Image (cartoon, rainbow, N blue to C red; front, top):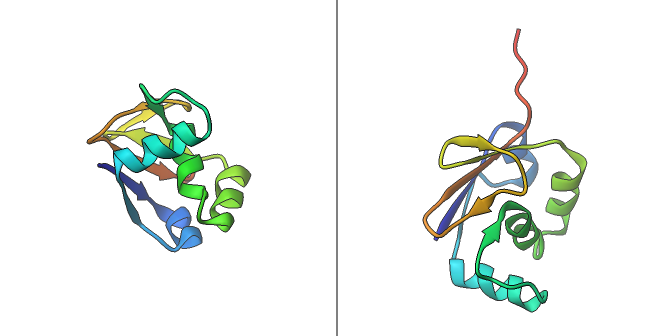
Length: 95
């Protein structure tokens, strides 16, 4: 299982703060697109999340988002594995 978290305005735009992704479902989705499934990455996870949520595609494609895997900020596409926590969040500004 991969735990996917959404923070700040992204959470509001998607109407969700958390998704639990079954690794077998992700593997089947990736295989159906003709891609080997030995390893997974964040781009594939985003495509999987957007497959049944068309408005999510625009949210993910129109914004610069940060990704953290297991609470460490990473660059996309980054590897992900079963048991990982993947968080998406918009750039943070402060004052």
